[in-house]
Structure formats: structure tokens, C-alpha cells
View (tube, rainbow, N blue to C red):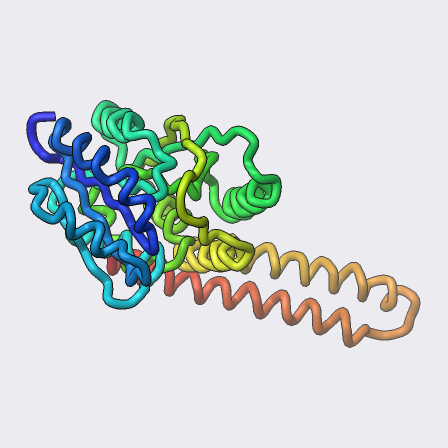
Length: 291
């Protein structure tokens, strides 16, 4: 790697112990491979910023500091905006990612001229609760949008920095950032690939992912789908309501009992959803043309 074409971005919130353990190794890796390291301290309440300042003299390190916590996605956004390289790759501060996989994904995106490569994690003995949640999110995303990515919420993704900066305004500041940035690239017909990576168990600190995180992620996925392809949401609802109304009302009419108010309400609501979908589709086209 002759020129610095790649920046590693690490969002860090209360990761004092993890950074103490992992930052020296990461900085050595960056020095040996000509990579820029950008760490965003996301309003940490512990001594994360103090740990970063201990390494501030390293020419490969850029420190971005948030006075207040903005969220996982907000920290990544600041890191991406601070980057000046062609590619950026995100990894977590907890030391679960292997640095060898950084080069693996970098080489893959260069060889294929892809716009994004997602690191598909191979996790053995994963907690059943988190595994179920991830599976549910993946199925919902695939139902709403045609995707071929298995581990869409992986924290390790490499992508074209200029495209990333272009789409940051569409992405949330929450943990859902990982899912949404990939969905935005896919929606905009960019080449998104996936390559297998390995992960290590977290040794220090605590994970902040919970049930609310999963719910927020599902809501953000719905927002992205409605933004780029609203008829994928409105049309099925419209068809279901109209079919249900007809199935409910026809037998009543055939029996000579007149028209069912409930059946008519379902049909009219279905028609309203259809036209709302058409309006949303027009707004979506206007928004996409403005990007």
C-alpha cells in the first residue's frame, strides 16, 4: 500500500479499557500498512479521551471529540467527514475484529471495484437472543428490499468515502447506522459485496446493543424503504385491505343483507393507501434526484 488510500474509523463510547488494550496494536498496524486511524470519542464519561491523548503525537492518528454523546452512527459520521482517503472502513473499539480482515476487505474492494464490501461475521456460540434479533432484522430487510447480504448489520464495512459522505445525511445517529448505510448503497444501485471475516469475543467493556436497538433498527429500515421505494410498503397494505374488504363484503351482499360498512371501510382505506403510496413514490423520486 504505497499511498494512504484507507482510513480506519473507530467510534468509541466509554471504551477506556478496550482502547488501552488494543490501540497500540492498531497504531502499529496502521504505521506498517500506510493507513490513517480516526477515532471518535463520542462524549465518553470515562477516560477514553485521556487514553487517546496519550497517543496524540502519532502521525497516523486523528482524534475527533464529541462533547456530548451523539450515538454510534453519529460518531461514525464525524469520522467519515474527517477522512481524506479514497476508502474508509469501520471497526468496533472492543477489539473483536481481526486487523488482517481490514487488509482482506481492502484488497477485495480494490480487486472488484466495488462501492462497499461488508464483512460477514462468523460467530460461534452466539447468544440465541441476539442471533434471533439479527435474523429478524435481516428477514424484514430482505422482505422490503432485494438484498444479497447476509450480515447486513456488521460493524466492519469498507466503502468509497465520497459516496459515504454523500449519503451520511440519510443515515441515523443510532446503532442502526450499520444497517442503513448498506441499504442506502443497495437502494442507489451501487455494487455491494460481502466477504467472510472472523471475530473475537469481547474481553473488556460492555455491549450497548439491546431490544430497543433492534426496534430502532427496524424502524430505520422502514424509513429507508419508504424513502427509496415506498410502494414496497404501501402496495401490500393496500392489496391486503382491499382483498379483505371484498372477501368480507361479497358474502353479505350475496345473502341480500346490503353492503357491509366494515367491508367498505377496508376497501376505501386500501384505496387511500394506494394513492398515498403513489404520492410517496413521487416525493421519493424528487428526493433521489436531489442527492
